[in-house]
Image 1 (cartoon, one colour):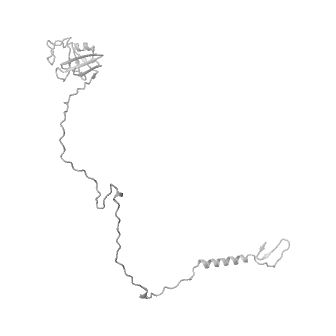
Image 2 (cartoon, rainbow, N blue to C red; image 1 turned 135 degrees about the vertical axis):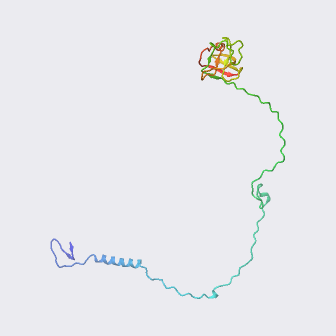
Image 3 (cartoon, rainbow, N blue to C red; image 1 turned 60 degrees about the horizontal axis):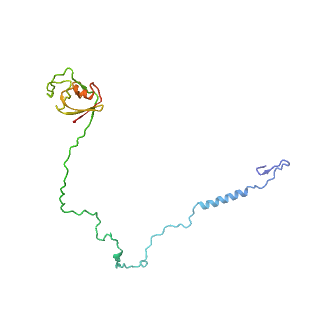
Length: 220
């Protein structure tokens, strides 16, 4: 163990004997390295100088140069017509959209034989689920249209409607039976009902009760 330059051993203590410090060479080498690095990092005044005063330039240094005003003309050779495109654009042509050529006076339209218009009648069947019939209490009456000579009977075939003109032809169909008749009276007077059949009509249709299932259409 080394203490302040003195070396002691366990066996024989030697006091007063001084040994050379082994770290001296390392300290000297470190100091030299630091000094060398400091000289590199800190810039010196090598190569620097103060700016000199402006001096006159000798006119003999310059030389007069003449500018040639002549210009060489460049010519473009003409292209061979055989190698040109059929859709080429001339040098003096204007690029624009083509406009339609105005036509002359149009020829008169030929007269065609147009067939006469025909009226198409579409027959539409309507379902009546609240049709009724009348008779008892009205037999012997002549009706609102005056189309029942001698008055209403059990055998009279006709139908009553509120607004259709008297004599309008109406066709009824029920369970395969079809009967064509005319409007001969006004009625029915129950809300929600359209037709009121006579006793003779409901007998032919086999529908002498108030209910549905009867189809009707205007015309025969």
